[in-house]
Amino acid sequence: MTLFLRVAVVPVVLAAALVSAAPADATPGSDITAVTLGEARIPAGLLPFVAGTDLVVREITIGPGGSTGWHYHVGPVFGFVRSGTLTHPGPECDAPVYRTGEFIYEPAGEWNVHVGLNRGSEPLVLDVVYAPPTGDPLFIDAPAPPCA
Image (cartoon, rainbow, N blue to C red):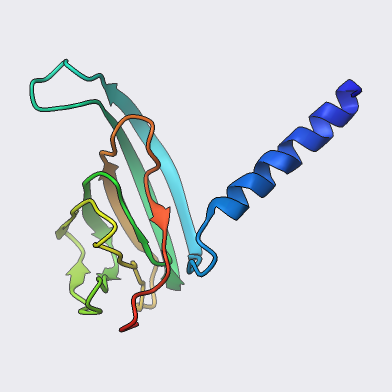
């Protein structure tokens, strides 16, 4: 295979593999951007209660009417609403609302499928710290629960 073909074909194959890895009935996000502000790795054994964790800090902006799409996390997530209002339906479709200056905690686990919605008229800006096990994704797309 020529270098040109390898450069052209390999990224396409990898992209197709990543797309096909998402659940078939996942609900994609809309009008959302994420900027990674920092990353750190806590290796296993460094602290007696940590088995190896990646820490990722992101600024997430969701435009008016935008959504994260339904998803869950394999590690805990801690968030702060910098501006705007976050509507946050969970697995039972209850929808707590978090306003500017409020904190949010999302426990890990497939059982905790949820979506972040901006039902306001201004952009929603969140500062978020993800703490998944080392090498795991920050979130996993999921189908909406039956109550949605």
